[in-house]
Length: 211
Image 1 (tube, rainbow, N blue to C red):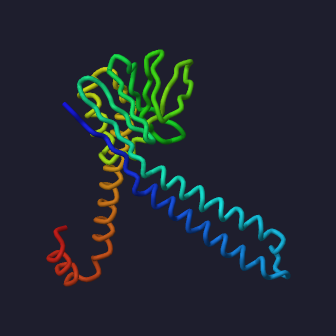
Image 2: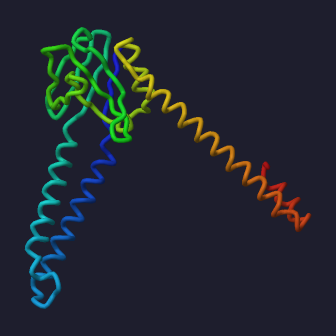
Image 3: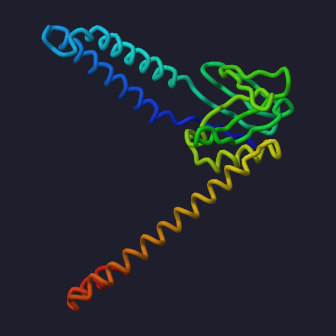
């Protein structure tokens, strides 16, 4: 069994370019204000120029960082993680747990390593006295979150703890299905009440629509 998990950077790269464009526009506006001594923001023009250049620089650096591959290779012997140009091989014996954790209303894949082990390309955080590395939000993989979990569980077995997240997914899907069914029923009811004024129209609509 061998699986590759990639990061989907499409939206993030578009966001970075949007911020860069905003920075260019801010810089351009500041330059126009600078040549107008009577403008309300004339005295602040240099600050906004600096701010615009900073936004452009940070956005482009972030965009370039996204070009570096994020890859998790999973097999029966362990994980190979490539982060920010750094590759780390982690045998399953060195992995204490892979956990899907909720952080600030977003679910992330975390990894907890055995003492003495480190993951290149990431800084760890301390949780309950243990060193934990956050890998990626679950919605940033190129495949569906439940497929990510299934691939990890096939190779990592009981080292994968995603029960809370799977329950969250199930509850969200149940709610979405209920809302969809409720909206469909509301539309049917509204159509029945609104179509009673004309029998001919009713018949034509019935012939054209499966409902």
